[in-house]
Image (cartoon, rainbow, N blue to C red; front, side, top):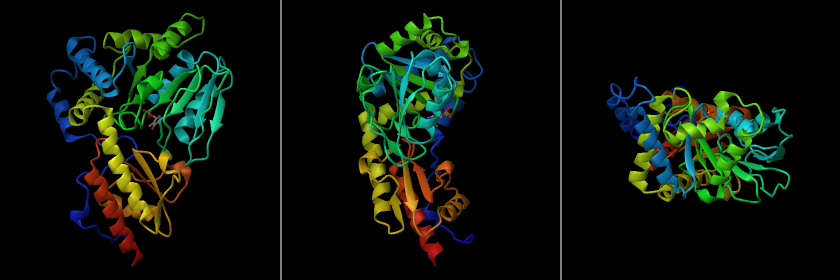
Length: 370
Ligand SMILES: *Cc1c(COP(=O)(O)O)cnc(C)c1O
């Protein structure tokens, strides 16, 4: 097996297909280097860094077509830290959670551990399927995950009742369809769809979400300063963060959102490109006797993270050969325990590389069989 060799003309231009972090485009790194002596290493309270934050916030506003009254928030700490902030600052008493894999489950567990909140109402689906959302009359938050990164299932947020719609969009934002009027708080780390590095969260907040944040802040609930969403709102309005941000992460994400706008005009255009990549990957799997999409309901299949089960050929063996050729990180989510390839095709991954990926797998599977 170790001597299986992939001809170099089959290889993708860039071999990084991990489900997080995303590959970072060379142009973004060049911009980072250009700003390396003027913006990096300068005060985040001064104009050069604040203007990067402003451009990032303006880019998000344009990409998602935010209506008046919606605000773009930015804070230190990725989605994992933001879950704690949400337990303090957006859930009044009880939240409904749709869990269908690792990430949606983790947020539900954070909330279950918060003694000042009622036990969450959890609707669970078997990995590889999508839960069926429904009204939750005694809940004040409906917590969704736009794209369950661990299984490759997407779940489009919708309004079902009066609860705030709070969506972890970490791997889906900027790649999956969204009508922002259907959500109140749409939050994401920047190292996936926005091809940046870790450590920051952007959240699109509706007027109702901003009102809830202010209301809860006025109660006597204890809130750790770092996790205080009211402080996040205050600082974001000034194009700042409460404590020192990862400036490189801001710059890389700003370049990516501006590149998406330049290439596609708005989110719809990006989604169209994602559909073409998904169509190729899932169609390829359906055409192979030894492969099939893990997610059986076609409408639930993610437009950004594809999970492909293999039959009669070891995904570990395939991944080992791919890795030896610089085609990396298409291992399945470890706790899923399946014989699977998990291929992320974030907006920074061109269709041509997804096509090259499947050609490489065809070659490796053919070589392993002989
Ligand atoms: C990656 C991911 C997270 C965790 O993001 P961090 O920035 O590592 O905290 C949370 N939710 C989803 C859906 C993810 O894909």
